[in-house]
Image (cartoon, rainbow, N blue to C red; front, top):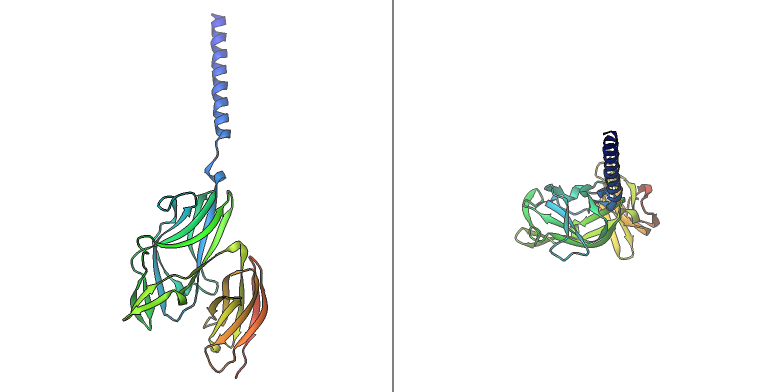
Length: 270
């Protein structure tokens, strides 16, 4: 009897150790989702335009994995409908379009699915803003990027409203998006203050054929030009108040992930 009990005890202990070993092995061999995923963060900013408001209704934001066909492989990174007034997204202001974990890999496209309610305000009057194919296939943006496990890929979507709005008929407006996509890791900013405030200046950063512009703030004269690729720029200040002279600052250096502060730019009276 004693030998039988000892055998049963040894057998039970052996089975317990074996099961525990299988459990530990399976846990150590599995990979948690966090270890195979990275993160994408998309922010939207805007260049100025001579409208009161430009309101875009976005119902969903998606990205496309490169290995998939055109109909599959879309991953939703934001499904909360929102209306964005693009003209408020300047001088350092931005909005988060999407912030989501994704499987590591190569991605090729971003698209904004447009809902109902997009409109434009001109001289206090509201008009519907037509966005061709926005509801069906969305605004598609070709942009190749890599999601790396454990890292965040941050992207600036810079909407050029002034070149995106087309007046097609009797107070009919269409949006044909002109958008720059600039990874934050390779871009910087230029900021400063225009004096006097009453010059109501437009400030542009120019490099070769590329121009990125903003308006100086009407209350403070401050400005900030976002999503600029590294390089050397000319900063052109054009006052809308014709009492003041236009001026250009040459050889302004932009460094990735840094702000170049031009301090106060004093405009001369004509």
